Length: 460
Ligand code: BES
Ligand code: ZN
Ligand code: ZN
Image 1 (cartoon, rainbow, N blue to C red):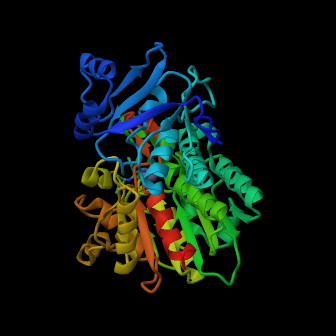
Image 2: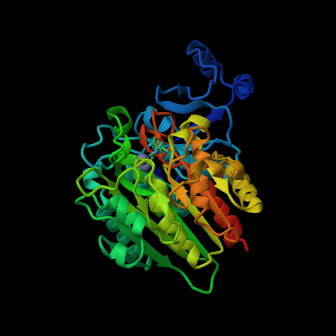
């Protein structure tokens, strides 16, 4: 159990009473006079993300009032994890189980700290998991999100392609899955030319990591994640500001790995495949160049207009391989474009999908569990922007407008229309701390997709 959660009894724990400003008015009507005076003297108005400690007659803490906006929001109590004094608490509210589980999850996610290189300074408060909540389901989600955060926050020097492979192998060992790897020059022999071209300049060999789990008779679900362990931009070198956060460019891989973990831990009745093309987009004498024409696994030739549009190059080989087995469903995650962040900001992943029913169900799951995702179109007329005069397609559009769409259209060229496919272009990083989301690597859209998979396969 995560250290900020406990399944012990609520005996001796302090109740947390979540209140909207309107709820507070009703609460005050029934409150003891001393508590009422205390709340008023504290100027507590139950604004979201504020709280008020209420002492009992004996001067000990009797309860915590916590201002919220929307109980459905998983992060409505998440600021308390680090704001409350040490000790045990429980949520005292007449909430449905899903709402209670989400708030409990949000609490735990608020307790994340990246401790690989620096010890945590403060002991955190603990929340008792309410009766009726599924502690394992909450714990699985916490572990998945913490895995994403740890993988992304770990600096590139300690999170190179070989380290991503260790992470996948650890996972395989835990859940009895099988992993294979195609590394370095074997990528050429096995026909993954684009992954090789992007990764060949680094002393850390590029690779395709391939995990399989589950009964082959079950519907095949294939997850793909962009694993650019560091994105210098290549010969089209990024400036210092734009390069600073590029240890996070394996954030898509982190999402695919964590989602695979959720699927296996829940034992979803699917046949799972996880593909992680992992490279270090580095600069050296052997780097691929602007103007080069690359071969790809699918057989399409690609003109390299810009070596900084490397994510779509490694993904196109992985997607072509994934598609070759005609899965029931293929989903990829990638920190693919700055343009997606211009369109939707840092917190909302862009989703592209070649199948309307799939898209609608993903969006419904996203709404249901309050994990935002926004659909953008695979607008076919923009394909013109990625036409090349010397090759079948070019990796960076001739005009910058709609950059997330042209990137998604590039990927689309490698996925047969008959395979239901969703592509997530995400930030994978919280640029500033907010409740439940400490600054740093972060999960975005993960819960939405997992909820969708559970709806589709578990309740079938
Ligand atoms: N990893 C970046 C995209 C990125 C940057 C995602 C910042 C999130 C935050 C990607 O490899 C890249 O550099 N894309 C270029 C593409 C362009 C050259 C067509 C971009 O978005 O500018
Ligand atoms: Zn790039
Ligand atoms: Zn990149």
